[in-house]
Length: 82
Image (cartoon, rainbow, N blue to C red; front, top):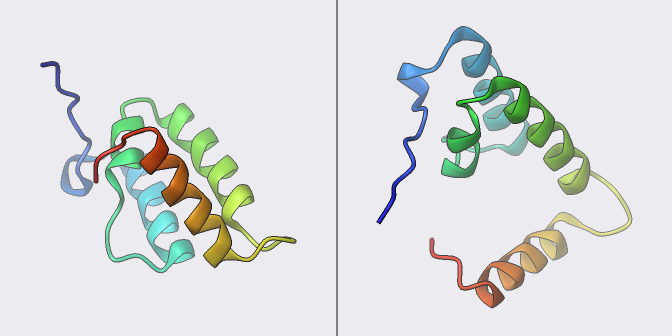
């Protein structure tokens, strides 16, 4: 089975570390989820994905709890593992 290497915080470039810090601060997380660490191999892609993620999960007509529930259900339907 193929595996994908993650860009861990301690191994990241300064640019990626900055994005990681923004992710943790904005989302109130103590860690950077692996989804973002996979994308960090291409910093431009990570920046774009993070911008879209921030927009989708940010304030709007649908509250954050509902957005997270939708993401969870979609992941379950797609047989995603944690």
